[in-house]
Image (cartoon, rainbow, N blue to C red; front, side):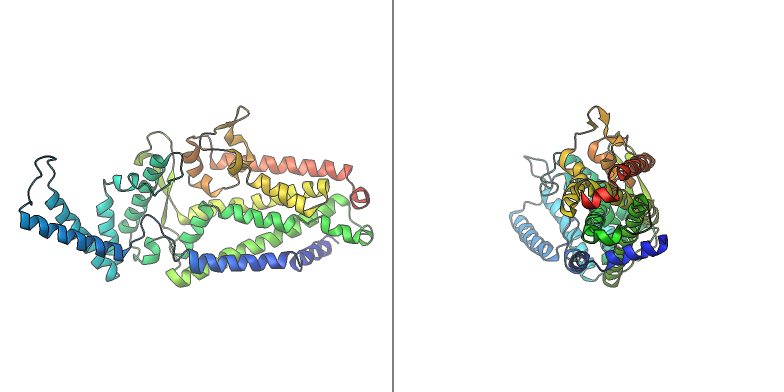
Length: 402
């Protein structure tokens, strides 16, 4: 009976007229993301050959003017050898442009890495980077160190340097960045949407469902389990299709490629950083995603019992999902006198826990991978207890007819 009921609930979710348009929306979003947004994404490291050509043309004119005027030495007022500095940057940028046009990406990356070594000012002085951040200088310096660690890893190993690898567009790198940014929140919102009508949809067939020979609590468990499997199926399918699309365009990538992580919040120098492989990052992150999906599905069971309306469930559950984004700032390290690391919402965006980004953003060291798993497990246990008690108070008859 349990298996048949589980299959029945899964098929209802699979054929839901409410879910099918949302699946189509995910498909359109995925194609737009992988075929339009990511290939045309601009970052600090995006190379613009037309801008470089214009820069070289202007610099060449300036150099000739200085030669004609005899201003090729040191400027007495500032002590700067401007002509020599211009000559250096002209040769460097000319070499970069040639390597880029020849698609010699190994040489291009070598030259770019050489130009950035000891030149953190190129990042920290860029006012377009993190313009809205409360701590732009800190964030720019952080991005510079991460970029240098990536480039040095690419050059130190035997990876064939490609355009996709250099700009983090390979299949594995895109999935890593997706999980590091807002990807997990999107995954959890999908689970919230699929499970928001978990109970309310049955109120249309109350007379039929009253006769099912299963306890009310077991029905709630079977419903949750069917939606859990459906959500996992959608999430896994979306990730696989996304990786395949990006792999066709830019290559699959390498599991042993290094991902920069923060291991301390003391000096904010390179000593506070380390690396892990993409395989380790993906393994640690994806291991917790099912737990988070299950947590929100069971939370929706509680909200469904209380509100009996799918839109209210969706609203309140989404509010809880984005609670950390709405009420926690970069300076918030305690809530109601309790360290932020003891609250479950701190760990909803779990990719930032694995790479230490959450600690960096809040300037704390109390948030850790194992603590996150423990907090989430305790949260699930509390939710399970609440569901058990609530199922006794709001029983099947009261839910359907009250």
